[in-house]
Each structure stands twice: as structure tokens, then as C-alpha cells.
Length: 177
Length: 227
Image 1 (cartoon, rainbow over the protein chains, first blue to last red):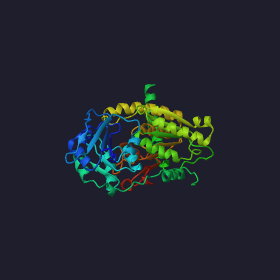
Image 2: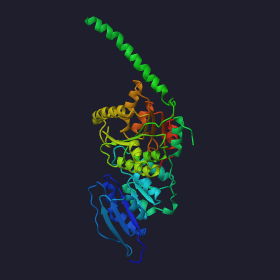
Image 3: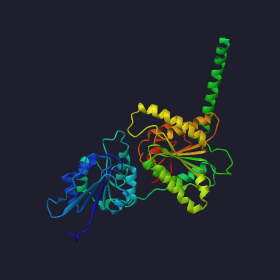
Image 4: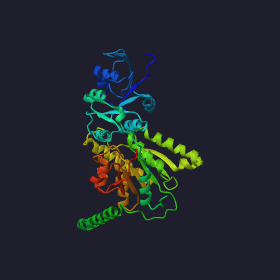
């Protein structure tokens, strides 16, 4: 086991409360699906949620690998954990989405259906349509993990503020440089 | 005497109403046209930081601004948001090394907090009271700062500030150009703040970050993504 490459899955809900995601990630089926895909570690950042995932090591049902599980409410640097991860499973907040895409990590966004004003799924769905990430719901996460082909994802090219600022300058009568 | 006062009111109120109506019409027509003033000095800027992803997008804009043109800069964030102003402070401090003169930079950037008109998830009915409080506070800030340029990208925090700036324009007490950049999270529909500013034509320039949104709102401009 010691000679195997460490492949960590980082689950983040940011500062939100998203127990439905933490619960499904903690389920035996999703853990088995992650093991099947060759991941060795599962790190859950659970935010303001109240559901506490189990901390036990999970044994693969059909094989001899293990999934090491740990959880935190908040972490000092989300970016450091994303950098360390081989796969990120995130809530649909734009901050987490762009932080992960800009670090070039494969990303599954899980949409929180309990939010009142659920505009967040718009962004995840648009970026999924453009093949920059995978979009799932808590009840479809297992199927998404089982079916995912991370090599098919397209790298995200970050946008820039320059064109907007140029138009603002032009409007205010400044010479365009 | 009582009759005189009544007659005077009868004459004065229609006059006042028409003057106000003319001013509102003037401000609405004037919005969207470039301001006519000399560019000798910098423009006083009000930068509204909307928390989380909004702040990240706004700081991308701020970092592209020509600092000699857009100065001094007044950053405003919601009282309940303790992450945004530190980010702006870190950025402004990083400029000190570039430009050297410490005192000048501190004078060029100020940081303040404002009541929020609506928290995420708050009901629309209680929002009315909190919006009123936020509006009074915003009015005071706008009168104090007298911004010439306002940058905002939602959420609700920016509405009382823009409304106050608009009122100042109607009263002829100062002119500001309002730039609204809708959040990248809005792909198919404008946010409530965006929709208000768009429908009321309060923003001089209105940007969206997805072309399909621009097609739905033709007065908006699309100039790429910020993130």
C-alpha cells in the first residue's frame, strides 16, 4: 500500500451548509465508486453543516485498497487543498468553481437543490456544457463518479478585465492606450 | 390666510412636481452619455465590494484600472462581510511598492462599511425595512464621498448606493457615472440588482459576462469574462 501513489479527493462546501453533499460523499456507494476509480484519500470540508461524516478507513469491496477519510469544518487555505487534490467535488459557488478551474484540477460540481434562489446551477450547467467540469446533483453523484472520463474535460482559459476597463475608459473620455 | 396658503400650495406643488419630473427626465437622458468635464485630475471612485465571488470579480476590474485616472478610491463592503475589505487593503498595500509614496496611497484609498439591504435567503417583506435603513446610510455615504464614478456588480448592497447617487443627480448636487458588471454566475437571467438597474436605466454602462445574456438584454454590453 505504501508504494501506491496518493490520490486525494477534496470535497468543499465553502462557507455554506450543504449536508446533502456531505452525506452522499460519506455514503458507502460513493466511497466504493471513488475506490474503484483509484482514489486513496477523501478530505471533506463541511462548512456550516451539522452532519458529521464517519472518519473510518473504508475497505474496497472487491479488492484490497483502502480509502482514508478525514473531515474539517473550515480549512485555512482552500487553494492549498485544491492544489493537493487529484479530484475536487465542490458546491456550486462561483468562488470554488473558478479557483478549481484556474488551478487546472478536475471538478465535479454538486448543485444544492435546497437553496431558495437557485441561480447557482446556471453557471455550473453552462460550464458543464462547455466541458470544463462535470455537474451533478446529490442523488446522481455516484453515477457521475462511476461514468466520469476526466481526460475528456477541456482546460478553462481564464477571462480578463482589460476589455471591460477599456470600454469604461472610452466612455469617460480617456484616451485608449 | 388659510386660503392663501392653500392657493400657494396649489400653485407650488405642480411646479415642484414638474421641475422634478424634468430633472428625472434630464438625468435619464444624460445617463449613458459621457460626462463633460476636463480630465486634468483623477476621478473620485466608489467601488462596491459585494462579498465572495462578487468581490473577486470586482478586484479583477480594480487591478486593471489606471490608478492615476481612477483616484481616490473609496471601497465599500457590507457590515456582515469581513472578508472583502481586507482583500482590497492587501491590494492597495501592494501598490505602495509599485508607486513608492506611502502616505499618498493611503490617502488615495479609503475603506468603509455599509448596512446590507438584504441577506442571502432573507424574505422579500422584511427586506423592505432593511433596505430603508441601508438607503439612509447609503445616502449619507454618497453625500460624504461625492463619487464621480461608481463601480458595482451586485448583490443588493449596491442598490441603495446607486439610488442615492441618482437622487443627487436629480437634485443637481453632483454627477456620477455608474458602471454595473453583472456577475459571471448569471448566465441566463439577470440578478435582482442587475434587473433593477437595467430596467430603471440607472447604469451608464451595463456589462454582462455571457453573450446569450446580452442577446436577451440588448442595452447591455458583452466584453468577455472577468474570471
